Image (cartoon, rainbow, N blue to C red; front, side, top):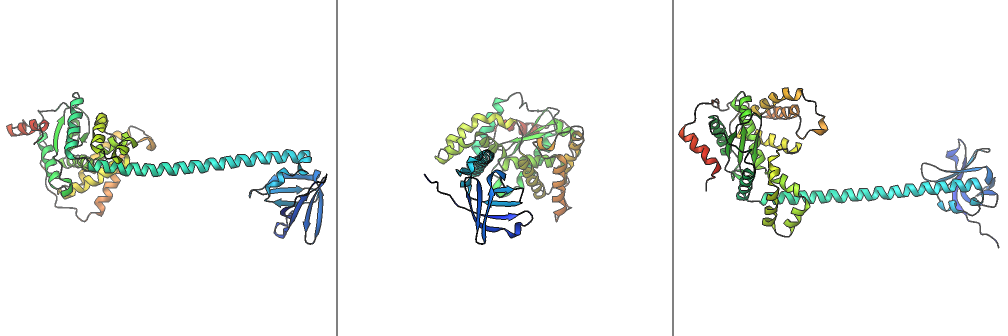
Length: 381
């Protein structure tokens, strides 16, 4: 029974003469590799050849004795019956098949991962867009109800200080900032209260409630710094950062409910995770946004916006004693936030004529101030 010889397209060249490669056909016989070219035919013993693969993925045979190279992109060669009769070539062919199969599997895996990553990214964008839509459509009354629930669930945290007269300055600053908000953001009735704790911080909850720790009042050196912190917290409210955080924590489930026109049901379910609002950690982008928007609120209220950067400058001393790798920070570095605010100031066309704010004192509360403070827990109808 005769065996049909198979031809494979390829080309041949000698060491150092790659640019003079000759195209032709390769075929294997019982003992030789034959290369047929228009100008002649060469035969080289199979036992002298070595088989490998170059960077382009083509199969290459080399005869070290003569310096000839034979190259082909036809992978059928790896199963040629005559090639496989040579032990060393059979071993090399098997190794190449395994290597090519491994590369193929890796390629498919990378394609799958790339496709999955693309699908996940598109899904993430859709979920984010839908979540933002849900947050934008939530009524302010619902935000206020959610905040009432948070306060009721954490009585040990929300112990309002009714004796610190500095609430007057805080309230006045909040009112001044609220009056200068863009019309679309005046839907909130901002109210402030003090919590007697040595924490240099303040936070806001959905609906317009702002809480200032007395530790922050003890730390600030001028009212413009306090105004900067308040403007930052008011930006969290107007941009609904807290609500967005709650919805993002729920993930695609809430968004699915949104798509089936059950927004009220979604809002009811979200309220079950209201305790997340107590953990006031926002992403870096959110904090940067609140800094920038708060800066513009200060300008609109005719308050020197450098107060926010001045307050952050006070925090650099505590950061200097704590080494936190940048990749693990939940907030932008204080120095970065100061630099960003300073750039806003440098670009500002207005740098003078700001209002003179009243100094903060701790004098006894007047009866009017006491009534205003008591009204904090009873929102106006």
